[in-house]
Image (tube, rainbow, N blue to C red):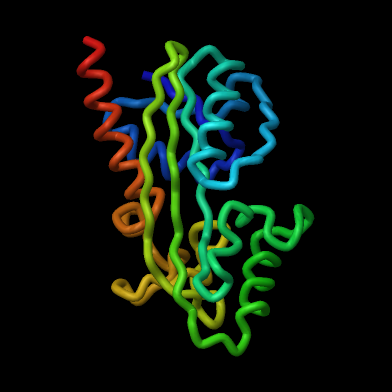
Length: 198
């Protein structure tokens, strides 16, 4: 089965492929089909934005489309940056500038508690929808550590592993991460869905 990922993010694609390929599911970026679907993420929740993206790409491609909307929620910032994680500080900032801004905003803050959330939605041409969500609790490190991953990974510290996301091997990250948990739940729901279609 082929799913179109409503994203141009190669990192997300790799994480999804690593988990879903074991189920015999092929995931391709929308760009591989010659699509470039611009979706305004107007939702106030990860679930709303994931649905907007998946539905738009499914309608354009005619294929089942999967979307992930995820972000970092920091307790001391009342859950910000949340759904604005990828745009925190403005569209012109890159990943490094974004996490440096976060560290600056949290300077002197002793409450470093945070969590990552990932909401995954898959829309099918027949109107069916499958949803899954995963979270990973952690803290914001005082300085970036590690070179792996992307986004806020160098500053998101997982206490039980005593490492940031950026210090984890891909399989370690998949086992504990918000997206890994959401994808595991999604894979199980998709298996049940496909079995019911037979």
